[in-house]
Image (tube, rainbow, N blue to C red):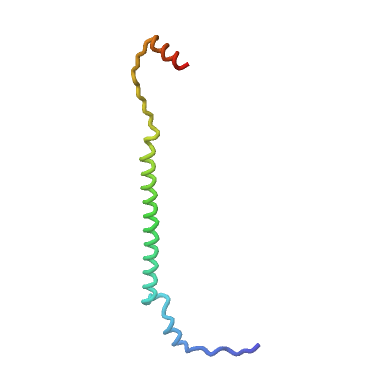
Length: 92
């Protein structure tokens, strides 16, 4: 192995190119605002999806609950014994 090192740029050039980690430059601000928009779009999509599920559940329940109601209709019917016997004789 050798003890040779690669030539490097002067320290001042590296510092000017890299910038500070504490000070946000134009690209960092743009990237962070784009990330915030992306998060907001994702949250909006989730909220819209949940609202669609609530509307769908409401539609299913509002249309399905009447199926569990019971309707009773009473019809008064008077028939004499002779009429009953006549109908019974024709059936059997």
